[in-house]
Length: 221
Image (tube, rainbow, N blue to C red; front, side):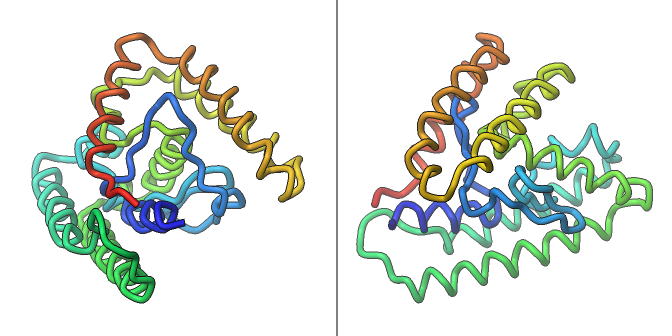
């Protein structure tokens, strides 16, 4: 339970919630999704523009050097400001403090998101929902957003990953809540095997590197 709450807080801003490409990371509480502006559709995790590394946003949004500099500054400031709000290893969970930190994380993320959006052109703003939807789909399938620039996924690979995610969601949604509890692990194992087939050996090595790094960042229960 504690680990679940810890990961939920971290995922609120997407700063350290990067997971293994070889594993599905869909949060069961997000299966229905929310079709809100700038956030993912059903089946994809909600991702804010402030949570995405600027290097990942550069190409799809065609950011200028000046925009990259400003957005990087905002993104790095968000990471630094939220550092103290992250759960610390050891000790007993303080639920009230966790709730307060969750709200602070949301507020900081919203502020950074607004600052970044103010830097974008109308054309970039129009493109942003599509970019965030794609990022949400990739992250829900366990693809580390921080690793995207290094992974260099092809359009064909992305298409296969999205199709795999849709297949995963369809199987889960066909089950009752009780059945999902017992069948989820089996479905995830099946998806892991298919995910590994989509990636090259080099890409799997990149994902493994980010997985190991983020395991070190996660606090112990």
